[in-house]
Amino acid sequence: MASIFSKIIQREIPSYILAENEEYIAILDAFPLVKGHVLVIPKQEEDKLFDLDRSTYLGLMDFSYTLAKAIEQAIPCLRVGVAVVGLEVPHVHVHLVPLNTMQDINFTNPKLALSAAEMTEIAEHIKSYI
Image (cartoon, rainbow, N blue to C red):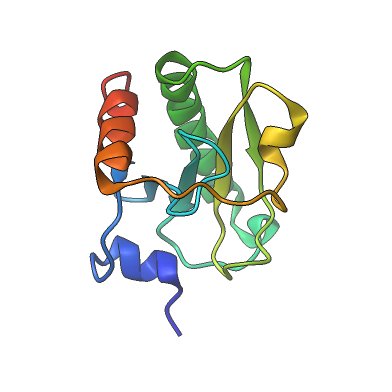
């Protein structure tokens, strides 16, 4: 069964796409911990990070690096945190979270409810630094 990320990749579900190539896609998290919370996803549907072949894994990290640099410039933060949890969606994805405190990357925190206009503004701002 296709994951929600596969459906986003196939454009069956709308998302705020920040960057994309043949192997990876980066989107704003629809349920962000903080403004600028990004998901970087390999298009290859794989459940666990370390089940990716080495080349795909390294490509994912390289693509994530590009996005993290853009986030750091676009969103006021002390640094960009990285998390790979993978329990909520059975498709590898990297969370890039702008951090000002350790609590900013606490996945038990309530998620932000941002308007479509806010999401579009954040997406465009991050994309301007890619």
